[in-house]
Image 1 (tube, rainbow, N blue to C red):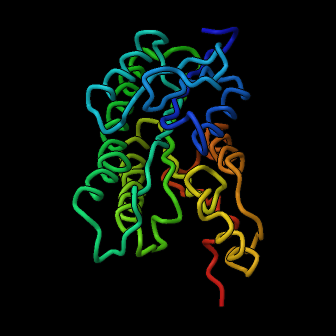
Image 2: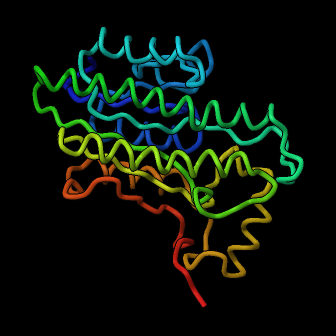
Length: 253
């Protein structure tokens, strides 16, 4: 490990956007962070001292390779952040959603996320048998306000995030007795590559009152939620959804 970075975190989909924001924040907090993305080579903008392990979460072999690498090289897994996700390549009306698009989005956002989390949870439970020093593992699932707010031109994305929200509840219930808290973070409208094409539209909607906090979010806003979940200050709860959404979830008349 580098320096005194004893605790280890892995963040899927952390080469850019929300995942990069979370990974950088955990690194700044002293974690050894495994950055991960689908690229076979490390990103040019990733500092040399930060480990990178490629992982397409929809690929079973790559899921296993990611966890195997972590256990082999570090023999601990303190924080697992399931963040990797994609939007539909083309936004289509719910009546025109294609099986291929549905399968692609669900394979990454839900199926891949579920089975990678399963493997990570088993690794954490195994480490519990002879725990490394100061071991207090936890899991975080990054979903979206689309877990409950419909967008009829990207149905497969909404379904995948709603499903992942339930996955966080399932793992929270299963792992609570093992002392592993599980959190869900629901980002709202965040300025990333994924939202760049509709940024002006969203900014106009926010200015018109879409969210009580009238600004578009930044990946650092989501990262602060992850830092809170990792701090230990929230450990008398599990399965909790943390809304990083500018107050969008507040129902108003």
